Image 1 (cartoon, rainbow, N blue to C red):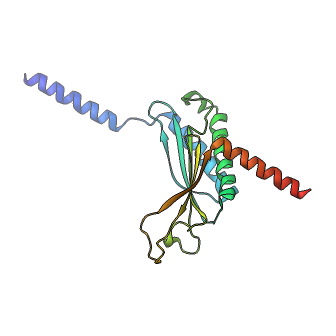
Image 2: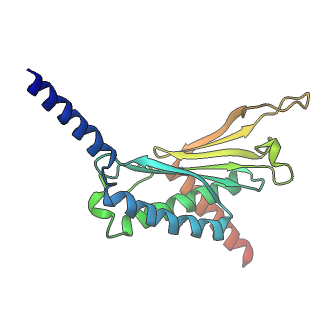
Amino acid sequence: MNNLRSKVVYFVLIAVFSGLTAKEPDYCRYVDEVTARYTREMKEKYGLILEGSGGEFLYDIQSVSLSFRLYEKYSVDQIRVIIVNAEKRLMQMLNDDKKIRPYLRNFPVTPVNATISLSCHDLLDDDRGLVDAPYIAFTLCVNGKVFYRVNLRDPSGWKINYPNYKLVHQETFEEACSRVEQQAGMQKGEER
């Protein structure tokens, strides 16, 4: 009886400590490499500052999520261009990476598997937090949809300790892409 108890304790200890020393899967490192390159590119192109990253990586790569901070004020049309181009570039980089491809649960990666969020902060007073309406404070591209929210501030001028978001527009990712293409076409027409 005592011998059996010691074997059970030994087995439990081995299981616990082997779990603590488990090596991170290679595909997690590959995603980190791609997102590091992507983050540098987005900072150079749009001034995006990475705030957080994550995803679903238990047995393979189900999804990748990135959150960015901006210090600008944007309308829906302006932030749409950034979120669409950022989302397209993330999907392209994940789909083109030969080391990642075998681990992708869904190939090609689509807006359902790649999530990007953008929060726009007040450059002059970062303590104030997010920019106020009518500018877009938070944009989220998730599950093939894009959501645009403004931050409503207390009219008395008191700071709100948490964002008071109001959804002002939403569209599918495909609709957002179409609008960006239309906007680019109109700008090209004006240049002629």
